Amino acid sequence: MTRIGIISDTHGHIHPKIYDFFAAVDEIWHAGDIGNIKTADTLAAFKPLRAVHGNIDGQDVRLSYPPIQLFMKEEVKVLMTHIGVSAGQYTSEVKKLIQKECPQIFVCGHSHILKIKYQTKEKLLHLNPGAAGTSGFHQVITMLRFEIDGKEIKNMEIMELPRSSRIID
Image (cartoon, rainbow, N blue to C red; front, side, top):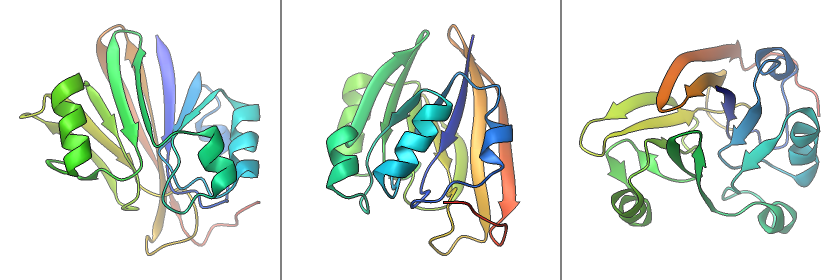
């Protein structure tokens, strides 16, 4: 069994509650707009980090993290990118990748809107953790954690925090 924490759109900020919420996870997946390499390094020092760069990320982040990650976690294929648009209305690139690779989980960020939805047509779980930083229009800071046990995806949990909460750099 692998415990996963997912965040996106930190924009260079790490909320202190992330350390409690992700204390028991085995790794963190970041779906882009990390903000800067210091943020990525801080997260990677806390837990193993798998990430993609987002549209606001500079060269330092882009050189360290690709635009797309396709990988297996236990017996589950995962596709992660920053901009995927909304569930069922994917960008043409993402749609082609989903059709070709048939992932069981698709992770994206960008919208700053938390979304957990099973897509029957694509036979995948679409996960967008919302936004974990303070930049953007969102009113709530959100993040996800769950478990992968063989082929099973289970125990999905959401953390919601007021955006006005103090942030550390």
